[in-house]
Image 1: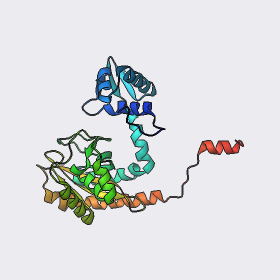
Image 2: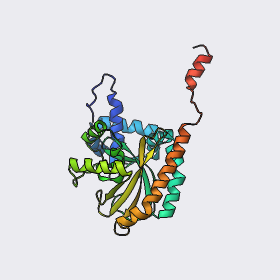
Image 3: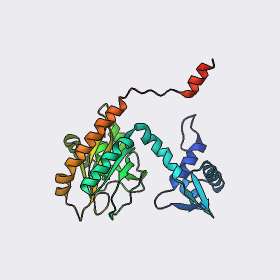
Image 4: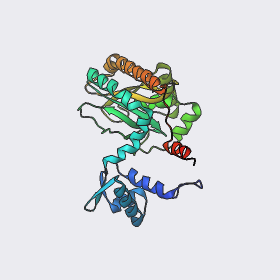
Amino acid sequence: MAGRGAGPDFVESLARGLDVLAAFDTDHRSMSLTEVAAAAGLARPTARRLLLTLEELGFVRSSGSAFQLTPKVLTLGMAYVGALGLWDIARPHMEALVARTGESSSMAQLDGSDIVYVARVSVPKIIALRVEIGTRFPAPRTSQGKVLLAALSPAELAAALALPSRSGLPGSDRATPEELHRELTEVRARGWALADEELAPGVRSVAVPVRDGTGTVRAAMNVTVHAAETSTETLLREHLPLLLRTAGDISAEWALWQSRPHRELDHRAETASASGG
């Protein structure tokens, strides 16, 4: 919220604008000016100016006294995912995996102590939690989060877990720090993680790492099932091998994509050079 910047170059107005965008979520798709101001911790006149600016830029629309985000906000996150080249590579593999398993599959990356969903291919099943691109969950409560946390160094892990979750959900209450570290050691050794109704009742998933061209774990990919329909044994025996193969294929293609002979030139710099500027 406002006032948290410490550096001399911190732009408070930009931070406040991002606070306004972040105020909207699944449970708050449409809000009044007063509600936005309260959620973002801003004075109403400030919130109004920011909302009108965001509306002019196309990120927000108004209907009567209510404001909603527009699909243009997806460009903010998808620019990052697109720059990685990951979604275009992963999509056909994820679609094939979902076709074979009949279950949803998602990809997530770590942001502090949360995972953030960056790709998803789903099937129409009733589960306890709604998942969309950009959805956050506390990493220790998810299979993807465990995979991503297990890939960190001890110092990186401590720093990540020290950050409060921004998902709006409580952290794990099913494991002590010692139990979590012990589980992450097992995840690191075997190469996959299980979350059995830790995030919500009925939600069971298994996840594996997705690596870049250097072998670094950059994302995690899962298969999610309804616990009442699919046992842990079935999930691990039938779906995990397919998931491991799919993630391996994505990682291999991503490594090839990253090693392509390609260079992006700064058009402005090239223009300035050509003009003698």
